Length: 154
Image (cartoon, rainbow, N blue to C red):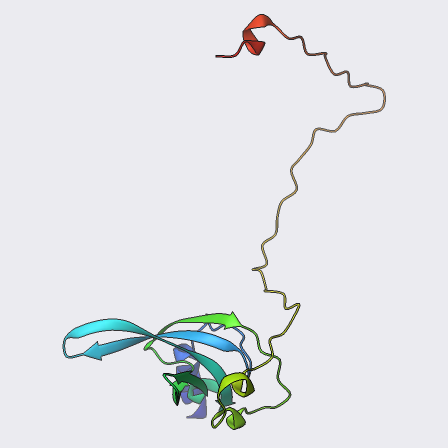
């Protein structure tokens, strides 16, 4: 029975989730359904917590808008999440940033990581093939001759 549940969970997991940590600022695009209309809403904030594992993993985003702090909890593998975008990487010393809740201004800032390399997709580049020359065959470059046709400005 556990094998069936685990197999079902593995089918539901998203594959294109970027690697983000606590303190990172990310932009999450979610699908909002209002009546019969669908639209995409973007929520940008600082990741203050990640909980759970597998299909039930959640993360909390915190942002201050018009002087009011707001938080939103998302399921990591939710089908309503259309896209994740990492805006900047944060350098933190804690696993949860709940202390950002009451702070405003400079005190609410998370220090940015310096020198973070973005992971490029691993693509094997083929080296261009060059014709091999042997030492017994010297390569001679022919001198270029300029003609009146090639140097005349038009």
